Image 1 (cartoon, one colour):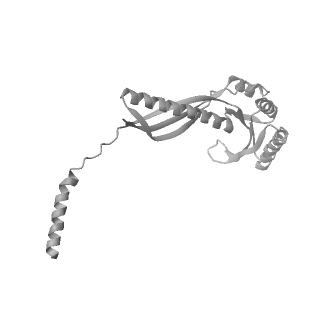
Image 2 (cartoon, rainbow, N blue to C red):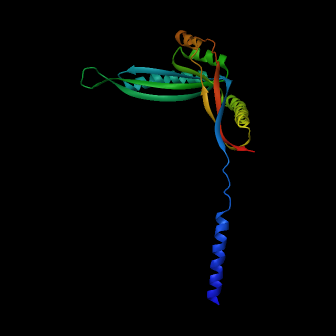
Length: 231
């Protein structure tokens, strides 16, 4: 009896095998990868300035006293400006070797920095000009404030998504098909700051207050993805 049942089961499997092999294979959907980009201008409404005191002398303690005095005085002045954020920056001391080939130390040099940040460009310009009576200006940079950048990135993201959808519809329409979005990736490339302004350079040379021109930075957002063509 068991042998008969086993034979019947084997026959049933053999009979079903051709039917399974004959089932149609689902065709893969046609997919297309594409990308789009959008850019918007963001106002450079945040100024950052780095100023420094530097001294050189044979006595490292005396050099440190002079540098620390200048930095302390500058910090005291800067803290009185409500619209300007101020903080201490890098400080370094290093030996100055004699040029006699013996490697002996003939002096010590110290440099200490302060960093200023403000969205009030007029106040920043005035303070930097005032502090250059005792400090040297390393550089001034202009860029969008974080909240300004976020707002412009959001706006450029909407533009980039619309551009992606328009391009997807164009491609699918040219092929006589409809489409659906299968995958999306969104990212921004930061911003491109403008070239330094001549007015800022003039302020460095004259060590006096001068208007800062913030200008604009271009912020770009890229959207990449994949669409699937449908009937």
